Length: 79
Image 1 (cartoon, rainbow, N blue to C red):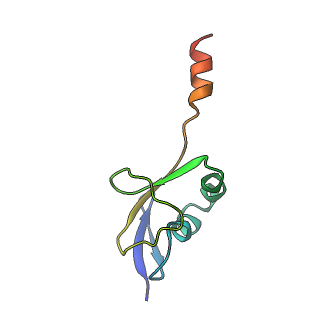
Image 2: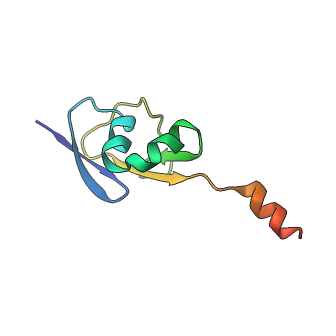
Image 3: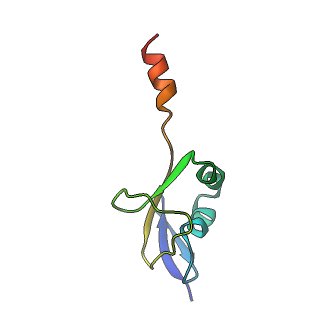
């Protein structure tokens, strides 16, 4: 039996008890190293951060995005 979880608008079937890490690995594996390095963030449907070890409920909605690089943008603005 699987439960549906949504990662970046894609439906991913996962086993009950799966974590946010499992969802990222299945739905956006290219972003998992960035999540581990703190360069990407997993958020829920409300935009709140979700820890990678967090167990998910059926129907969970996750968004995985790279963190913005404020320092570089601020440096460019001052040029």
